Image (cartoon, rainbow, N blue to C red; front, side, top):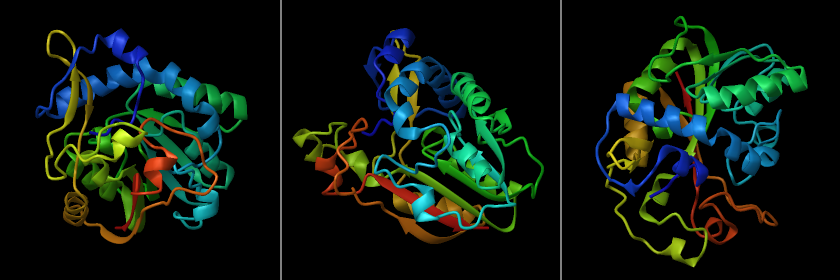
Length: 277
């Protein structure tokens, strides 16, 4: 399994008692992930805030920055939507490059950090709390959309997200998003040698779910294969023109949950899909 967040305090607050590989729908996924990310916001930023920055576009734990990679192309003067913005460092970086950006997230706790960082940096990115499966924007509102590990792994209906992103993009607009590489699903969440041993099936799409003592989901993460993503994108009207699998850079020693130099040298941890409407 792969869990993006590794907070133990959120587990205590929410009473996570067990792991249950069970099917869950949109309503349960939304409720669980609102609760999780609200509870995890403080710890998440204590642990990862320095790495993410307040105005910096970091695509992934492999430390690939948009300033170096240029995956979005020219952003100055463009209308941009960040889906699952968290505390919105990527959105603020884009705004600092001259883009007109809106940041969207499901978690009030994460958006609280985003609002505080807006004030601290003097970059007032508009923030919207909403479910990515139902975007509250008019059709054709944006030139491009992006997401760095936001929303996509946590929704039950990824097709709905892609369809909504396509709807709010203008013709020719791009959708670029980073997720945990699907092959990571077959390995345990361990940055050490045990994390190199296959323990699961790549083809098992059953979500990873943590539940409390009553069986209520407290954390939900969904798995799709590469083919699942490609088909969902095509159905939504996108053309995939690039798939970036960042390599672990020399000299990068920082671990992030199950991402580590040991594992990063052997197989990819992140997949970045670049698509055009």
